[in-house]
Image (cartoon, rainbow, N blue to C red; front, side):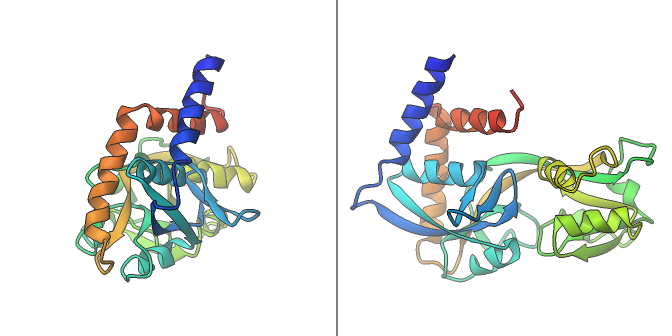
Length: 253
């Protein structure tokens, strides 16, 4: 197993290192506060997590070098509507943003949009309709399913971060909060609330994409090339190796 893992990582290192002086370069915006998928490493100033690794590997397979700009998610998506950056990740596709960006065909990965509550909530199988006539905390600037956002029977309260909506829940200001499952659990652990704030259901399982700018002259073409690169790393074992290494870092193996 150790030798196989070494070979996988050697292949990845060689792939990501193939950025010679003639390689194309693109500027991509990355969100800064969505661990473990993408968060700012304050020491290096670079994004860390599975998502930037996948973005670099997919583009490297196409001979494209990536420079990252790591910024808050709302600003990330805003800049990807201009020509300042080629795109932004990690984005979900909604009815609102579907025609605001170019999208590659296959999501980079999937993650549950979970419902969290205080541990005294008796049910563990809540769904969208369970939130009707309830108050729900969500994070400003994040994208949520259209049927949730447009349901008039759900009262939504926004805060600036996942950490703040957890505080809203603990203080009794909302009945439930929505967070993606793995990032949500990490935030709960960081706030030492494990066992006190728990998952009680889910809204959906969402794909996450790199949203490409419609204002950028390379936006549409690069979305297609990124999809081609993504398929290459899925087929040659790089994608699986990156995911397994990511899961190992989280103690999932």
